[in-house]
Image 1: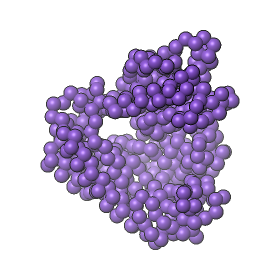
Image 2: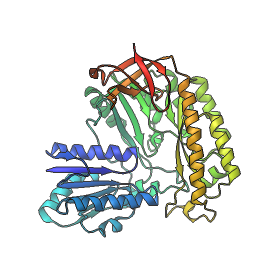
Image 3: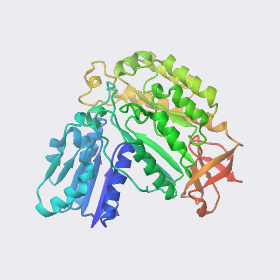
Image 4: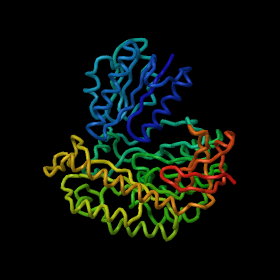
Length: 430
């Protein structure tokens, strides 16, 4: 039996798709690419924007056309939010949301026997338990994502995710540690901690928090790096900073979403900080880690964002000194307060602002990389690229390519950066 899995959306979906693949792999399935003939198709959907819904529907229909006799399974955030829309697509056999997916193999077997459509989508807000979608390996045996947390309690005005993923739930620390030890035993050197609101880990526990988890992971022998996929500025607590000071494994890179660069827009977004508060925390970080890499998400064209506000945003982003911007035009999401706001920004204005921030990103990223030209850095070798060169990332997330033997993949290499550039630096192994 062949299975194809199509994943849309975020790193959490990527992790969950990998876990689902391992379920079927243990049952003897062969994995093929999403555009190939398969006996079972799984589409892991996204609903963060209206266009995410549309792309999810397109992916479902495309896979059904590839083999109308296959079992077609639709899971994920869009399936959670609109199961009736998924059920209406002819050829869909199984619909699950963002819970109960550990039973997916059983559902497929039931469908094979009974040929009766299955839908199991409950009220995700009522869920209190972390769903145990564990992994024992990862496609890359060098660097692995590990989902430690689910859901979000923030309810930002532009975001539907709490309704698609539910409220904050954390994986038990013993399970997290056990999975990391298993990954390390299979050669993984770097673990990327991920979730919907990753550093909110432990907020549903009485006496164990994110800093505690970082301390425990830091003690795992054989693990070289711990990377945090994303952290809110409010979650960079004194306790987390203390762990960072004492750890030799935490990567010198944090992705800290700012989302807007003007206080009025932040307030309308229901982001509970000001630019001054954000900047003060960044300054505190840099006083401890002068060369830390800081990346961020920024939404442009949010309802009510004027030209003056956008100009202030550009100045503030440059002043904070991010070294990479992930830029997104605001996109309406039905069901969110922001979608109902009357002062929507025209699409051509949003497009223009995106281009301006992409230009700013190129300058900020190049300026950051140039600081390390001539330096010796430690690169975790992840792959051999199309140029035949080894490629990997430093602790502060610089991507570096250099000549070397293929058997170095999965190891740490000391490399001199001879020529800095964005997004790829050229180096020479020592």
